[in-house]
Length: 283
Image 1 (cartoon, rainbow, N blue to C red):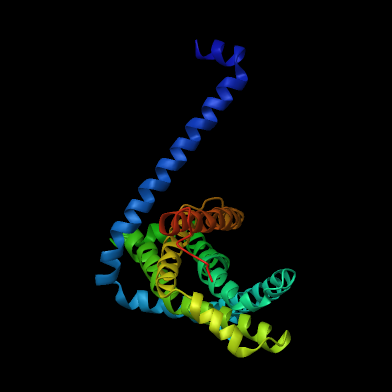
Image 2 (image 1 turned 90 degrees about the horizontal axis):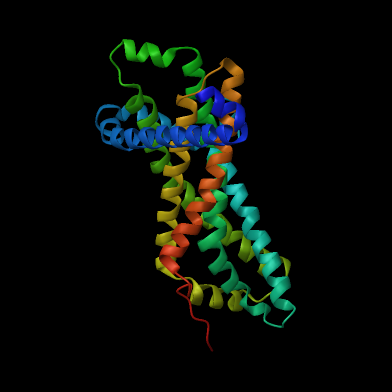
């Protein structure tokens, strides 16, 4: 009967199989993420030394990456140039309608709500996330994870929970550096390069910089770190197919985490600011 259906409706059968495989993959993701979140308290209690080591590795990097300062320098430079680009575009665009004095408002508004979180998430996925996927994938194909299980060590708390916890802890100072760099770059480009009065820029910047936006921005960065680390550890933990499979897992994880970064930004922005943007410009 199954053979008859498959021979008569091959496209339908293929679509059903793809849909079934997608549901199966989604279920595996959900189970792994639930296990990961549940393993974080155990990682914090029993694997504190490993967590501290991973925080240092995530922040400053290892090997050749440590020479340039690791993720700290990468995220700092990304947000530094992003802040400068925002100032350049904002000054030019606002200057077309004669209100270039509002560049300080533009920097305070865009950097905190959009630019710094998204750029930090991208930097996190490209450095910490990809590294975690490669490490766990190499351990999987070398059967080191199976060796941990044979020694009665739970691999999810020890390998995954510690990395997710370290990423969420490390993102706080990293994101603080990112926000500061974006602010400095925006002010430098506006005041030094374009010659706008420092007093005018500082007035509009401080007027429209809402402290609660900064706190929500940090919360957004932490959620991004959680999503990025869980996605990358999943693909690394379940890598297969030797070194080629590890490379494929890294590519799949980076693509998925980039989608997760912009999705988290969209959902949190809608939840916090709604359709009005929680902002009023009047004068």
